[in-house]
Each structure stands twice: as C-alpha cells, then as structure tokens.
Length: 208
Image 1 (cartoon, one colour):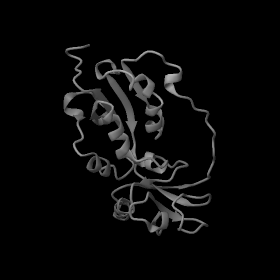
Image 2: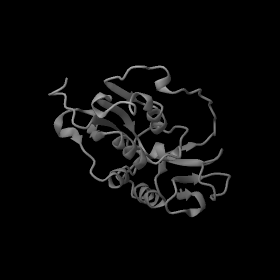
Image 3: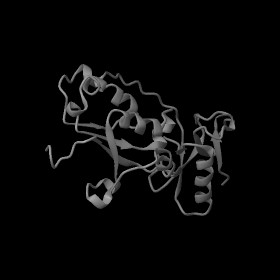
Image 4: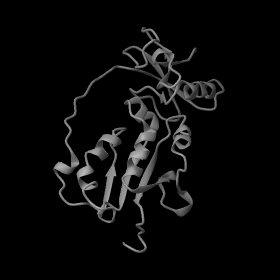
C-alpha cells in the first residue's frame, strides 16, 4: 500500500492525516467521503482518520507505519454530521464546585469557557480546586483547536497542570509538563491522557 500525508495546501504547520486511498484529490486537508485513512495505533478502525498536528509529525507517523513499529488499520470516512445542542455550564450551575471534570471529545476549550462564570468572578482562593479534563491533542487538532492554547488557557485561570500518566494519581505517575509545545509534540500517534489542573497555592493536605 502507498501511504501519504495530506494537509491543507501542503502547509507544513497545518493538521495532517495519513491517506491510504480515495476518489478525491489531496489538496484539501479534511478527509472526504470515500477517502481511506490510516488509523495508527492499537485501536480498532473507526469513522475518524488519524490526525497529526503538522505534516512533519505525520511523516514521522508514516515512518513508523512503514517500519512496522505500529499497527495501521484502514477506515473509510463517511462524513456523517450530527447536530448536538449545547449550552453554557454556568447557565445551570450557580455555585462554585470544588472539582470540575470535562470529557467532551476535543471540545474542552469551549466547555471550559462555558464555565467561566464559575471561575473568573471569584478571587483565586474561591475558584474550583481542581479541573480534570481528557487531553487528546490529535482529536483537538482535528476539530480545529490548538492543544497548546488549551493548556495555556487553563494555566491562565490560576492553575498548575499535571499529567496523570496511566490515569493514576500515584506520585510516580504524576508529571508536570514544563514546556507545553514540547509536551504536545510528544503525542505523535493519537495518544490520550488525563490532565489535572490544581489551583495554585492549594493543597489537599492543608485544605481538604
């Protein structure tokens, strides 16, 4: 099989996916109906193509596929559209929670903005102690969002971010990303993790 990286106008900084075959040209970066897309990793094939934050990352993914170091499933894009009504969290919740958890499949930035009414009006000491969200840069990029911007967004609200490696809260598995760009670039094959954002100056040991 011949694989290639497809991105908008061959822009090196644009989102890219591994294309296997299809009836459409390769000038558009969005997969179209009939395109065959490579699903890199151990997951089963689904309706989504596998995305990378840049064409350079996509080419690295291609090398791994060619070398056989990762599995590659093939999925056909069907372009199904589902309309989902949305609303703001702070329209329905009127007191500041201790913990907020988001699992919205790549739309974390908008969901967190929809809770600003529970965060921004309050001084730091009265804001939620923890914000927990799933972090999947490839999925966020596919939806047109910047994963680095999401991390900076949460940090700007007065939080320190920690990666719960292997979804464990054991101290050895909690990693604090130092440079967000380098951290996001390490997600080359669609990996996902969970991020805990802890309010600055708060500790469960002195304020349970």
